[in-house]
Amino acid sequence: MYGLAPANYSMHGSPAGLARIDALFGLKMYTSTFTASPLVFGAMPSLHAGCATVDACFMGYVFPRGKWLSYTYVMWVWWATLYLQHHYAVDLIAGTLCKLLSALESRFRHANNSDSGWHCLLRRKNEVPS
Image (tube, rainbow, N blue to C red; front, top):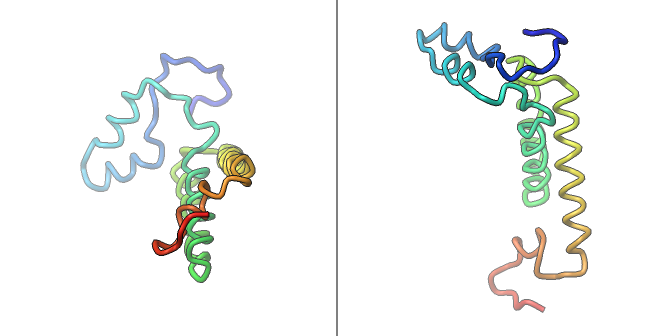
């Protein structure tokens, strides 16, 4: 909307593609919310993409047969944020990489601790902790 102009926090936010939903239903829900936001430039990295990716990895681990559904959800989130013009592709890639690196770092940090990480969450109720 503003091109490559320097960041200026007096600029108003934009509902971008969500304005079409307001127009369709005769509302001003997205328009009023996004134009009143004090954080106009908060999209890098995209935590929409990052959280969806980590959630998909976890659900794929817990339910291996349904992992395709989890990864389909990630692609849908990516498509929606690009289509609605709320993120650039680089925002999505950066958000995904940040979350994956964070998850890997956490997993390696707790690798020697048997009471942390996903294995602890997935331990059967009748198992006695070691």
